[in-house]
Length: 206
Image (cartoon, rainbow, N blue to C red; front, top):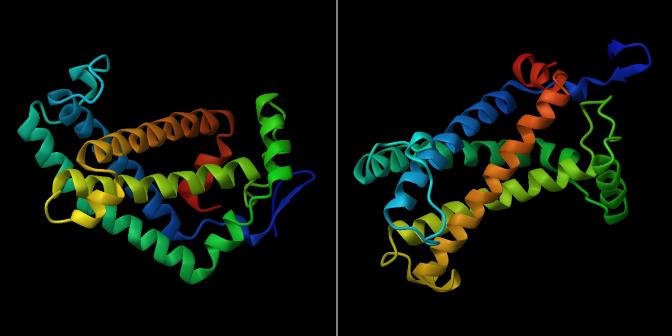
């Protein structure tokens, strides 16, 4: 057992394995670089004319530079994500940490979160809101990779292009999934600021 403060005892499950911490930080860096370079690529051919990203928050300097960054980091993101998923499934961590997500628990935890009453005493335990958020992010990364393949190599993946509803629809899916990841990232940063112990856990493992 690990005692953090009077009345709060964390089990050894609270310790984040090294592979979780490493893949977490690699994924964070990869997603940020992918998003920033993606914004530069988007500005060259916007899906929604009213939406443009300031050059100060983009990466690459111009379209060709952004594409180089995007494709280079893409391999890092995909490789790291595969390792993360494989180890989560192989160790049973995916099932223990993220399943099941019960509707009643989700509704109760969401209500507590909106009122600022959601407890974070035991960092080894994910509440229903966290479980759903992580599952949504995993699904978003899968979709962003698949839609990215259609945008990048549309002719080489005709079946995938059809499943995405065509090239233009794949671009929309790619944009929406990017927006989901950015929203999660912002909320994640806010929660870390509110519960700084979670940052220490991801840095030190306990």
